[in-house]
Image (cartoon, rainbow, N blue to C red; front, side):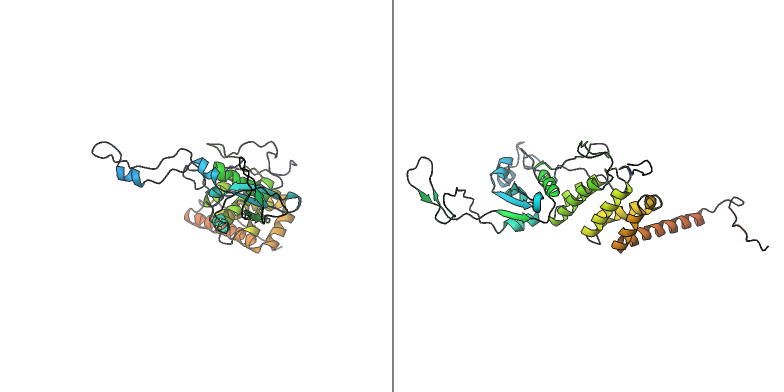
Length: 317
């Protein structure tokens, strides 16, 4: 990065009012191993838990229960970047989007090995049995996500199984875990785009917890003007007009720093305003609102007499 290009630190950037998002223990996709149902805090007269509550308590779901569920194939991306990932259905269906997608699969989770040209009339030889048995044609459990980013889907799956994704936030700070594969300053916008793509994927999958986590990590990235432009372009191209969670911080960031940012990426800023008029309008609205606020403050607290600067008089000579 050239010395003339400023770095915009994560602390306080994009939205001063943006709160840190900490993953609560009840986050919707976190699998708690060994958790037990609440059997009631008020003991019975004999000091034992209420037996009725014990009998009606839901069965505890273990991690093994999730791993026993059918495995779903996820075909992600296109071309050379395309990959077939897998995940357990019991975890995937915590997303309403995946719940609908998995509803088409049959309840038959039989697994067989194909010994012929097709599944019709396939013969399966059970170990220890001398006879051959026929098994029905298996229904392939695969969901195509060819329009989604492979890295974003990988982050989603990591979140699905662990409740977070790399790089994680360092507790008590606005920093992320060190990643040796990326520079400390995001000059291209790639680091911002990583979390932005996770955010939009969370929107598609109806997972507000994943969206909040991704949004909180965006505010931990140190960037440059050109990196911010690349990020702003993605946000305005891939989010709804009324999504103020991610759009408002972008507009606020540019409104408060436009005088500095334009000098570093003036051509990119102009192109962004032409390509996304809503972006230009959002930034201008905030600039004017701030000016009105300053004018109102000046009227409320006028400058002391004799300290104001006079306008230069035009000479009549």
